[in-house]
Length: 428
Image (tube, rainbow, N blue to C red; front, side, top):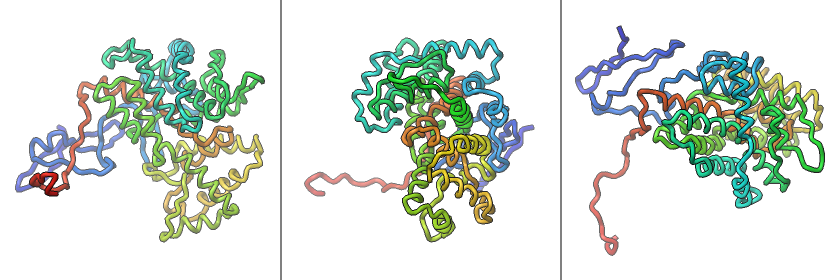
């Protein structure tokens, strides 16, 4: 028998179904609340509201657990590359060897952009933010690929998926080349996914560029740990836009815009900005730690703690090791890395941070790694979008395949003026 919760209101008692997920998460199904009571729920920011059921990603913030389709992210990071994780998230299972090869080959077929799309880049100012370019070009893909835009046609959807995964690195790399005045580098389909991106980012026609395998490994890990994270702001945006039956390109472009915000995908940029501020102030880490502890000071240490994780961020554990290896190998003379390492040591040893579980999070380490790889700060969030793409696609697919799909239409509690008498313009 289904367990029920009870709500008492206005002398009446209403039974509300309790929903239990596969990991024993409990929720209250309020779908019929308004029709039976006239009430709606109010939850600013949806922090206690489940917008859907989902079989894609499980996250337990108290225990520091993150799993994609049931697989711990730590095991996927240790045994898979990013393309294999894309397949898992989108199609729901780890691919067999033949399935994976067919998927890789299909991605390779779609890495180039239509030549006319390159002309878009000439319309952007040289200092345009790469996220603005990325969202614009992804949205414009619907005008170039009108042969496959029907969300209800599985063949259309599948080719859109392959086109997006293949072309996002090219679009991103071109935005970087535009910003520094270098010629675009065409994709090289003899390289794997991450190698190809780094080649398009850093190669020039005048010299041979050899991709460092340690750079590939570090970036591959970053893409994997960013691949999905449940119903976050950008993923919820993709679902909401897609719920209107907007095509996949339009939905992903909307997700990119949501990710751009400094409270979401822009957090790793904020980490580097904070490190720059400390460096410009003489590198006094202790001073800024004291400021962060002072409740009357509005300074915040960026890259520490997490809204969901009340334990160590499992993604941070994975990429911390990659960060340490990369910094040791490169032995870069960069004061920002020294400041970052001092801050990390404080957060891992100071009782103030330990008691409040303000551990270094994925944004802290990813910002440091991107800088070590030579990725410009403005490109940090673009890399985040590349990583999050398969998660967005998986959620868009799951929503469209759900028999209970509805267009998203939240309610509100109106707090404006009551009915007013209209005043003619001459009497106002």
